[in-house]
Amino acid sequence: MAEYSLTTPLTDENLAQLRAGDVVKLTGTIYTARDAAHKRLIDLLDKGDKLPFELQGAVVYYVGPSPAPEGRPIGSAGPTTSYRMDTYAFRLHSLGLKATVGKGKRSDEVKQALRDHTAVYFGATGGAGALLSQRIKEAKVIAFEELGPEAIRELTVEDFPLLVINDAHGNELYAVPDRPAAGIADYAPPA
Image (cartoon, rainbow, N blue to C red; front, top):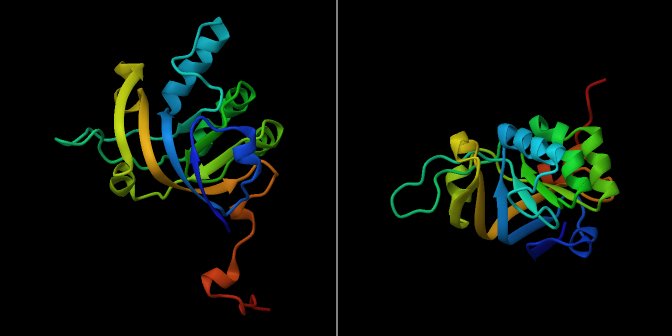
């Protein structure tokens, strides 16, 4: 496991070096989008309209943040379950999206898209939304404000902590448990 500091927009060179299990501290601009926002993005593409942000090199965080408390740019901002966006991910990766952030496993189609387009899937720690929000320095709604928490937001993040779950080489952190790290190196299943 290696640790990297990356800055958006991400490039093929950035992502080709990463392996499942690596730690990344991400700095720069990322975008929020959940189910309803993804549906609208695809509708825009189907109509030939421009998207509200540039996909090339972009990172999309699957999150619906809570309202910002006074003096903060955003409220709690923990990841949501990623598989709900799997239907849309292949197309967005084919157009330049380089990374998504969420929690949980991805479909085989998404894993293939990551290999085909040199992209990655990052995991953020579920249940730690308040802690993660400390790494978000600015937040503003840029599209679909009527969706409330599901509106698309542009976030400025600094050293946002991520774990590579699926890399661009077909590796998956969830597929190979690290038994020594879990303290069960000598475990043998019952006969």
